[in-house]
Length: 142
Image 1: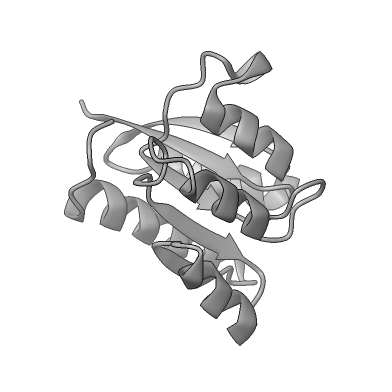
Image 2 (image 1 turned 90 degrees about the horizontal axis):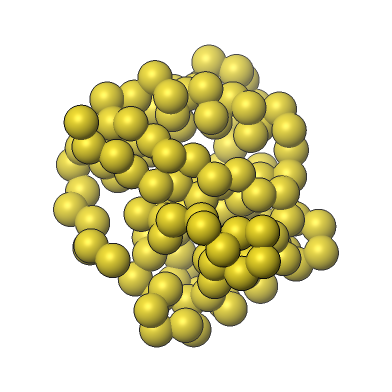
């Protein structure tokens, strides 16, 4: 069975739990690393400190509104690191701001998804992300 490494950068415990549950039901086995802020996200991506053994993600699910270092800063920082720049990023946020959408794409996000408020819709979106990125798209190898 294929294994996909996903980095979930989400500070909302409820959204994180729902995302993890929805991903666990997919066809692909997911090895998920969850961090709650932008500083932890960068440490995980750079494999520093407590994240030294964190696998390189095949996909990043990134919230924008994070403590310490927001998602925009994380996106800008890690996309400037050549060995990390090709990791696809799904911005998954409550924002529907045109400014956030445009800025995310300017910073090289691969897609921007506004989190649905409805539980069933949220789970459906996560399952769609899983299906698209791990069954349809061809991802680069590390």
